[in-house]
Length: 142
Image (cartoon, rainbow, N blue to C red; front, side, top):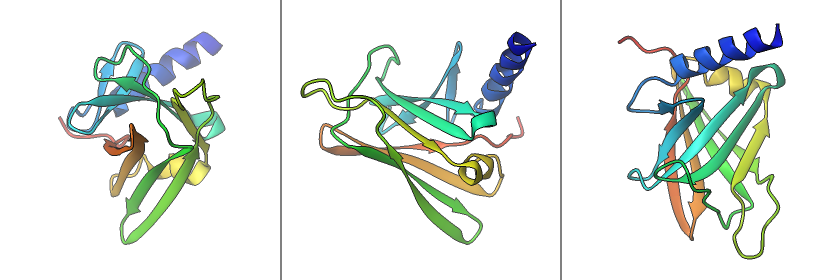
């Protein structure tokens, strides 16, 4: 039963992230583009736990990239309301390499990302430069 649930969740997440302007799917990993396709962030959503996990990668999605930041942010705009969420780094700093994984557990944020009128931007600093990528989980007409 757990395997079926994970399979359904995986298919649903791929469907939700299919709109190419905002995100693309590569196998079991879903990515958002950061900057001008310079970096990628893998996005994992654990709906049951209301958990969002972002892992930083190079533009190929194969090599881990490290941030000098202790947190990343999500800027969320829904209707007339705007809010910023901080995602603390959850990886140990390895020497001077920095952090590669940021996460937040927040039920309202996770549910808001599924609304059609929500715009969300993930922002993180990499090598002292700010990068941003659009997050979109709402269904799109194709």
